[in-house]
Image 1 (tube, rainbow, N blue to C red):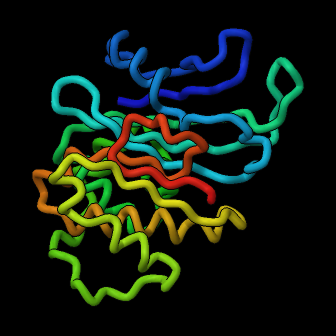
Image 2: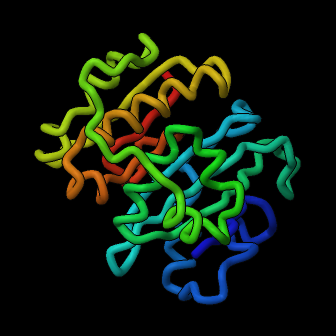
Length: 209
């Protein structure tokens, strides 16, 4: 299932398109949670945010939000446009593994994502602990450990924001850390890769320092 959410218009956050089989309660949850929280997005035009959170019936929603240069009804730049998909836990794990090629590939055709996830091959082997990643993400991987999640503690990552390309290293750190979790934990882990608010109802969040 898929939906498109935007922050523009007189109604504020609202759904502009969704799959026919998506229930009203799920759409309402997506409108409330799919977009990253916070104010001041006009300072981050061109950036993106990936967010995952649970919805009803053992499903996870994954949203891909772009900060656009469009203006809202008050003339403010930074309108958020979001593509959102809803998948079961097994497909969510496949999505996380496949997203190693980039989240853009996952959201090329959101309406067909379930069929695509069932057809693609993914590497299901455990990540090598010595797997080389960008050095700027090492500190975040130390914070993103299974112990914190097992204890129910939130992980907040803070980095200086330079541009959207630099911020992809933060996305990589979050994804790599989650993929090191046992599968039962991985398939329920909520996160947001870029937010401007600590009030996000997720386990892992990343914010500009």
